[in-house]
Length: 199
Image (cartoon, rainbow, N blue to C red; front, side, top):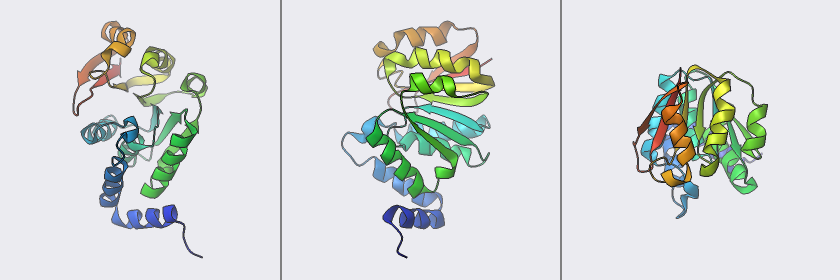
């Protein structure tokens, strides 16, 4: 029986290893709008951060087409961990599922369709790593839901803190003053990522 294109591509990329995955990641940046994805350098940074903090359970708010999630999943391969990623848009959710299949990383991904403010409370802790890249004005809400579920030493990272700070002033003030975390802002790409380590 002939394989479908996603199944055939997944088989090819599985044989190619990281080179095939990197090729697919580059192809995902081809559309002009890029679906608001992170920069490649930011993806590399997230992959390294996940490896460094020995993450087994990760949560992503804002899957989009799966670009950032694939980088996170690459970091999870060593630990055999899983990423729970939430997307509210059915079209982007479907595209993300296809991209995870093509790259052979679907076994590390639990992709959920729905409103993060409704789904996050249903996710049990402990969580090792969380990445926020959805509605900027809701970052503080995501943070407050996730923080009690995070393990000590876990990380909450948030995207666009340099490119769109005016949309998340309450969140940025909270992570700056919250004694429960130790926060810094890094800029491996062009948009900025806050990194809050749970005490």
